[in-house]
Image (cartoon, rainbow, N blue to C red; front, side, top):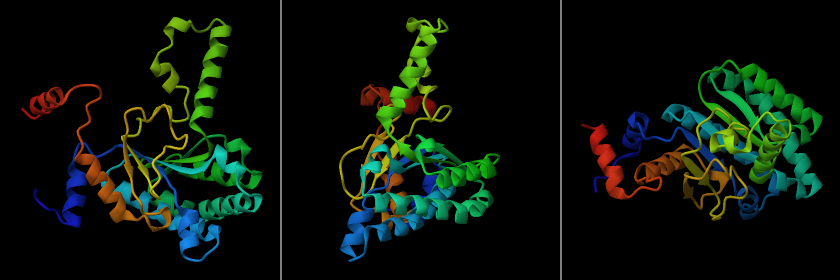
Length: 261
């Protein structure tokens, strides 16, 4: 098999029609990284901000249109109060500091999850960033805050049930498209690739509906150490896979041959 240099891989990814249009990242390993360095857990979260910046720039350069980062889950509220407070403070300081750069980079910020559960200061910072970047036409950056996949589905079911109760929707009319249109990611393609850092092999209640056909890439690299070269390797691995969506390999290859004819 031919070996490619790092720069060659970047050029191939940028030109490849199969490069993932939407990537979701479960940013795990901050606490373990900090512990391995003899530092407090919050140091891992602080260092992880650099990884977010690197990956946002990398995705924009490589032709990824949507990036969803699992920033703070519904379950994270169970963490010690001092850590939750530190995370909220970090969120506010980071978004306030980086929003001008995101505007320059043509990145549009959106949030998924229950933003209203965050402290008022954090809510205001995120809403301000959303407003300042809403006209940007480049990478869409979904920041998952107080997010849980089950809760998202529950919210969608309740909305549809209300429409049925009001007589505005027939249950027989409900399709997967109806459900997708009630999710936080409405109007965006489902993730092609899910990256989990830190080595754990689970999806942690992340985008449960949307990742039905996503490819999953797990790396032992903790999030604070994850940079553009790691992103490139994840996408390179993705491009080596055959996505069948229920078909057999021969059907997929036949379609590829037809499209290339």
